[in-house]
Image (tube, rainbow, N blue to C red; front, side, top):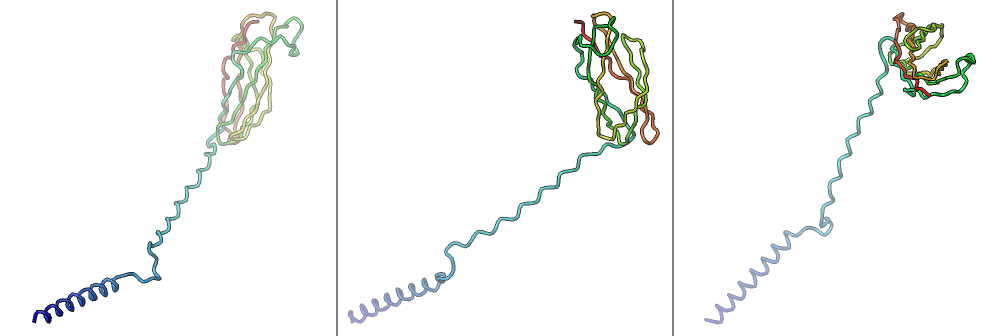
Amino acid sequence: MKSVNLFRSYLFLFLCVVALTFAAACGATSPTSPSDPAPAPAPSPTPAPAPAPAPSPSGPGKLAIQVSPNPVPYSGQPVGCNSDRPHTWRYDQVLRNTGGTRFTLTKRANYFDGSKVSEPDVNITIEPGQSTSVTTSWCSATNVQHTARTDWFGADTAGNKVDLPGPTITLSAR
């Protein structure tokens, strides 16, 4: 009887091995499926917001003045003055419309060492956000340090007055 029991034990063991092999084979993936699934596509980048447009000037015409250089070095170059005033200086005034309407300058008042020396009519039109450069020259009989200033007058297209005292400029001695 021992041999029958031994035969049954081997048979039972053999059936268990077959059953385990069959169970393992049923749980395997099919040969047509990928071994590693493809990664999910990356999301599209969020579009950057469009740049904001530069703010446009608004409001009435407004004048800003920049003088270059200041202090002004002595020049000595003729600028159309009488020969009794050979000491000269030259600089640029940049007039910028920082407001929202076009303006027209119609007059300028020129001061030398604190005294008004002339008040000529001008005709300078500057659009919003634009600028213009005005070269200014002075002459004197003395080569010492002086001061100068130009005030500007006009109106914008809406009729608002533009009255702006310019900066005081130092005219350096020779």
